[in-house]
View 1 (cartoon, rainbow, N blue to C red):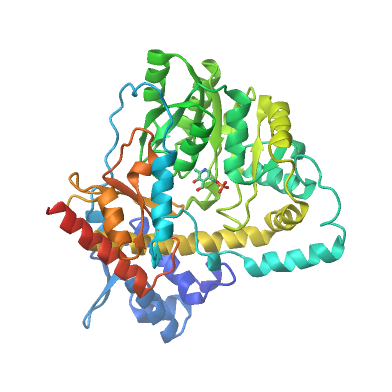
View 2: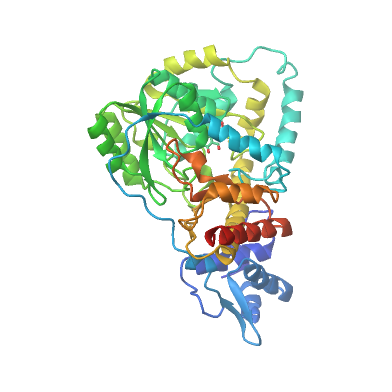
Length: 487
Ligand SMILES: Cc1ncc(COP(=O)(O)O)c(C=O)c1O
């Protein structure tokens, strides 16, 4: 195969394209642990590349932990250390605990405030990438062009529901996920959090019960609390997402579930992806049982999958699915734009959005709309996914190397964060406090449940670029966990 046959994002150096090619072969099992990597000479001949490029390929794969150099024998495929860690345990599928009013705010706020007070050097508690991973130059350029083209954009009134440029860009992108909608069905919001607020306000009354994944995104729990709603936590597999069997049991046992909120693609914090068959079944089950399905699809463009992941909304035949998403994780963390496609509740969500916050500013919508409509967005996403994948692999290797036996990990197929299971006697609250005292911040597991579950889990973000500080922080977390487990 020649180099020209390898498809490469233009910004990527040649050695990285070739390294990805061989990484693909390792991942798919074509090259197995212990096997010899094609020699530097073979690489030069096969791909018509220089000695230095061929060497860079091997050294890159070595630095990422995929190859090891053996003296005078060349490079060999390594058994990744992370493969030696057992995966995070599957939850028991049983009737969930009865619904309870959500009361997480004080706990979550205390954890957030503790992290903000401390002198944090390495912050691993988030779920997005560093600012440098996002397309600032392209966004700045488009902003200048837009302001030149529409000099009154900042002074004229904004359009209700959203700017047509962004609505159209979103509707086009939705086609990839199997969702066909008209641009005016898109209601632009202040991030996904406003979309979730509107969706829940549109379909519930205070005191109603909402089913959520367990563990779930703490921001959702805060919204439920602020709306006076009760949550029933449904066991969720770290591989395949919310258990539909457990949801069925909850409906049978309690019968009063008004809505279910589900993150089918790269769930936060687990990173799981629901198989398409489960998405279809979930849509049908909720429809048949008059349960509104609120889908939060914040992360799907961040999946490794070569084809776009489908939304549950793709199987919505009756308008029962309210689809919420955001551009904050994909376009840039500073872009607080999201949207809601509210199906049957479109009019009501539209009214609530107007009453709650009025339409979003035009400038950001037009700039981001143009970017999302362009091929530059696809190129940015490819590069972002690639960087995150490398950072994820590297972090998983470091965790496998520094944490004690009994630690479990299931490396997600995309996204920004991993869910780590600590040995059963180690509390992530203790780990959080001990690490914070040394300037390292993680997200302890108790943030992700109203029932104060998951204390021996934590979420860790792989959005930071490799550095000596990061490696030291991971080594510190491993060492603190070891000390806590030996107490
Ligand atoms: C699953 C999930 N939903 C919603 C949000 C909030 O999205 P936004 O920041 O766009 O409001 C987040 C942010 O982390 C999230 O992880």
